Length: 202
Image 1 (cartoon, rainbow, N blue to C red):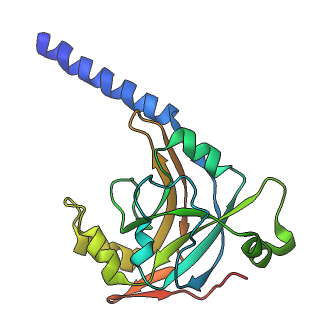
Image 2 (image 1 turned 135 degrees about the horizontal axis):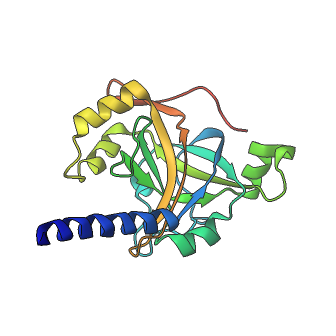
């Protein structure tokens, strides 16, 4: 009887924790707006970055800047709901937040980029942001190897066959989190290389 009470007590606690985490998750909607090739990341404009840790993209080499819009104020949301805001590059088939191929910084787009990417299409309350996806697969793999429990060869096969996607996210130690919908990345893994897909911004 005592074992049964402990078992049901643990179930109740797990359900309570799950309910609190669902209640403490802020969902945001992002809409892709194209991309362009870049050689480096901006010096300024990072949205709630990891304090004291330089962006990993700094040493990545050529990248694709991926633009997206949202009506959410990412900076205000991130300060409340996350320790730092990031994006994940992951196989589109992935349904959880366990692993990623690469995790990088979210930036606000410049005024020039807003004009070039959106022109007169910007609607009231809409903001333009960007992330930078490295085109060096070996660089990505070296960092992904640090996730000890990740079956990287199988994970890469999933990314090759099902495509790559991007998700914005962040979280706090006490359970708060922010996540976006998943959008297709404008890159793919062919054999052992990253390749850029056709559509471009601007």
